[in-house]
Image (cartoon, rainbow, N blue to C red; front, top):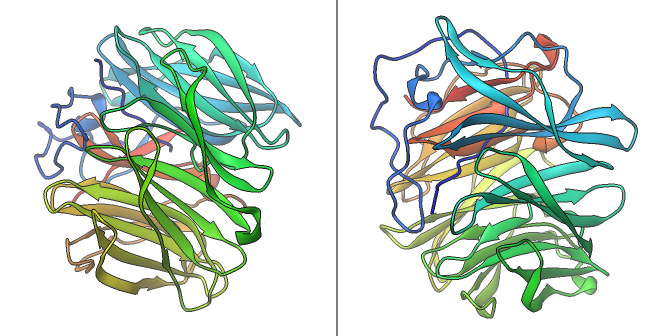
Length: 386
């Protein structure tokens, strides 16, 4: 099976190392070696400008690295509720990396989250959510990043993002349907195939669910508007809940926008989230049966929209620091949940939505991505390391 690595994007100058750093370990539930990407040659901690800007990119940009090439896939805002999923070929140039002209993959309504997963025999499934319609859909994508068959999954809103492949199992999409956190099993063609599981009832006021692959099964996280907690559950490869849900509380009792990383070496889950009332970011550490390892603790103030990606016995995190505008900062969490070092603020982010930036694995690197408002919403990326 081919690997696809994905991300989203910000601003700055171009810089390259002579060779990729080995500071970032391969992040794969199956333990496969990652292919080398153009991203692996970016200099450490230096934003890379990918084009001249002048985009109306709406919410998410995804870097897709495959054996046939590398593409930036984005949602372009053509008009209100008239969006296009487009691809831009990425190529090395004498001065850096360039994103080519836009090519249409799929016309959509108002897409705000996307994620790719590989399928056997080559190619991918792209899962996305329609913000205004409150629905979800999938798109079969060829190995050359050409959109093919499109499938609507009906009401399934607010996935953050929604698609993942269970370790030892198949594809699944998560979202909100009739107030429930619902997980829908999918076949490799992107159509429902198998169980549909409700993880949380409407009485909990759940929102913004997402899935992360484990060695076997999935971790699911969401936030509860009623209790103010972020919730974490473990599902097996058949989507049965095996542990949890457990809760992480934050100081303002407004835990939201939760994400989780799986550390296979220690068999720990690291949960990170924002407290939307007091503008702080938090973390907790759990074992694979969801027994607490490290209790909830605050990582930073004047901070929100935290993202996380596993890195061996620890994890890289990136967040928005609003103490001086809306700048991106990053650091590496140790296995005990401590944050011994963090970067300076970089770039300038949009103030309205958290998914204008993300942190993802690309090739053999962890890469932070954001849409930079000072650079005319220019496509950019940065390799995260010290």
